Length: 355
Image (cartoon, rainbow, N blue to C red):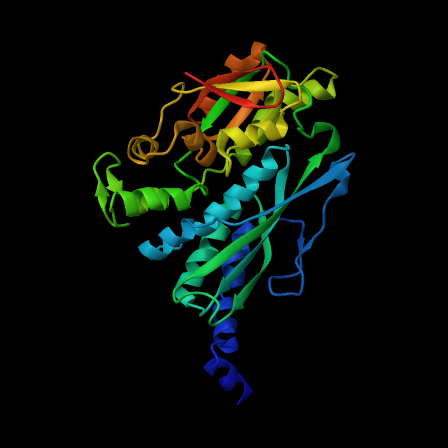
């Protein structure tokens, strides 16, 4: 009777258990040798192999996907949101040179819908597998009356590791260094409150509206998965930094900035020395059509656009100018669109947008 009373109150424990019964199969592909125990325990277990490092530093980050969830609700598509969250977190720690070890998720909802839950977890598992990151645990909370019908929220925590001597912190960035920009797939996971206002209120579109300039429905375009740059960054560091720094030679890759909330204006300064500015040359990369529309129809000052959106650049890499061409060639050879979009100059830790 207690269970039935709780279910009548909106929390069906038995349903939750049945849905979660499929989790071991979903997360099996994310397994790493360091994972101990099994999914469903009170805590996830991960035995870090400290013999691989001289001074291992754990790097952690936590995030959500914001109001991009509103697009998933409207399109009734939930298989990409989990990927967005994992990839965003991977990119956040990648800028420090860290490789991801494990990920934990949180899902909060009013009523647990098995189909939606499965799609979300499939997205987590897919992205963790692609990033060689173990999905070792999570929490699913049923909170009737707290969320609107059909809605949920997500957050995720990632833990990675980097050798202390190889950690990137931007300290070696100097005037003259080149800024390489890596293409995004779209808005990634930021700026959706403003984007929704522009597309759905100002332009009067519906999520299923087909937009000729995009060759796609606007809802599908807004659900494009946040790019993970983690594996590429690890390749870059192994090629251009590790052997050099181990030999006492200055590394080529000096710093990275993940272009998330705050755009160019707020994210790049997070890694700049106090006496350095960065100039970003607008028009030096291929602008995605969705940003052309936002710029043309949004009525938002240009400077603010570059503070809210990534404008087609999801990651920036500060490199030694003598090796910039080689780095760019290496990145492009791996299928990642990229351009030289700016340079470091004398200054006070700010970003300047120039034509």
